[in-house]
Length: 372
Image (cartoon, rainbow, N blue to C red):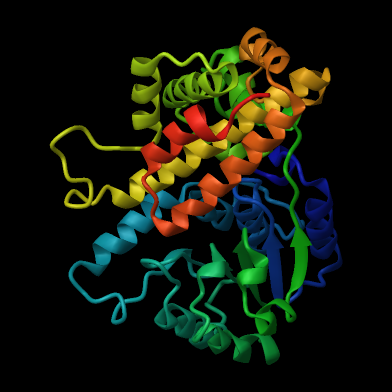
């Protein structure tokens, strides 16, 4: 990929290109914005442009540095190779470092955090420009997962920045970072892409998908190409059908018990009978799946609201369900919609108290959210 192929967020892209043209490169950058909008991708493109042997402020794609750094387009193989190379060594003895080229190092969380041993490597290496390197770049992905009690290890590099070295902190939660780190970075803020931009990205990267699938993925991605590319649309449609069953029961007060309880069981992420989710390490996955289920319910409620208000042109997340959404919009009152969202908020907050997920969904559909 080159700058010309990068989709969306023209403003931060333009700022970075002007830095390259002027040769005035900050010692620390903060790329902040929601997941999947291209922050990490643009960080890798910037690193490649800084090290392009032709020195054009762009990415030629043909020089040795450009070719070697192109592997950053897919981190999974790099991470697997680094973990395999560590073999049985302790993470604190052998830090997890993704280094496809002497001039570029990527740090990713090793377990729940970016470890102090990884940050100490940055401090040691930052003052040593490798032979043949034009500009040294350290990219910290998911930087909000820097351990707070060790994050200030990086302050030496930020306060006494070495020449020809740049740190790029990539994060979806910038305010989870220590203020001492944030204040020493030049911040670039990334926004969600338009639906048309996400579709354009999918047309290039998922040309084999049917047009209807690309449109649906763009609609439900919330402006995130990364989310759209990672979607399992078959699983999404199944979960959405279950959520629609629950919503229909809540609005119409005409539930079909067998279908309703099957839907709430599936959306709650409950294991099959006789299986112990915690024993099989599935509890966390079930909680995450339930959060996605709640997101789907929120999206359906928003679509119903748009249909009731006569504003579907503002963007339905499920345009293929328009007839059903119109019907639910006619049956639901404004007071009911307000109450349904409020109760769904309480259900979402209840996850912190480890409530029974299926019982909570049953109660929402049958008892709490009642139309007027």
